[in-house]
Length: 338
Image 1 (cartoon, rainbow, N blue to C red):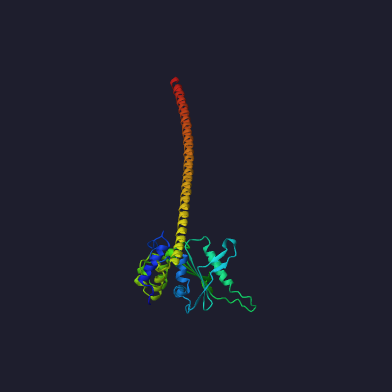
Image 2: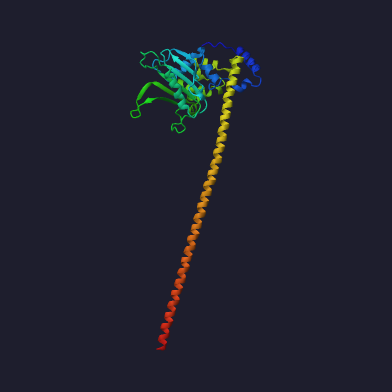
């Protein structure tokens, strides 16, 4: 595939980008964009010009029979039902040529009710298929929700390397799929540990890029296929216009600020947990010392009572001995008189 951007154009855009934001140097951002930023994700997947990139990713992950041939973007903003969720924004909301609904979302930070939120978004995609036509027979098009998350959904999962999960309605006894038209896909980046030399499948190549594209300095040999060569060219920060550069910079800054806030919160939470743990330990230690003191006190009382018992026993034995001596002396006295 012929690549249009020359090194001369890259240098020109690089110079313009530096002038646009003097406080931030291009080298601070690396060579390629971070696909986990809102701007980066939509630059690669959210335009008609790059629809082939999204198609390749979705076909690799969803493995829909016959593949996805046609894809149309839908306005991702839907009015929310609750005050705290004024708008529900999908990163991408698409419809295939067959009418299948696909929601693709990137979530960088853990959310208390993340799974419920995914179900809520999916339910809207199902509900919107309803028709007021009295002849509508409730036939629905399949709905797919692809969620790329930069955290572990289930920290107790025994298989630490299971980064890709497919969820469907199943019979809990037979484990057979009960309803095939709803599929939730979760890609947990924190569980993906493969190095670039260990990548075998298209899915693995995509997941690796989500996690590591912004860390790379050049195009690795394993990605020398047309679709990935296009992605790497699109992802070059040096190829951006000043406007796009600024948009990416602020998107990245927003992500980094959020990471900083969350890490700071976690550190504070960890510090509170340590304080609580220390207080609990001190409390338990105090209880233990109190219990030991009570035990020692009871032991002292028992030893005292035993000593008193032994003392009384000794006195009784002494009195008995004196009585026996007196009896013997009296007996001897009688014998002598005889």
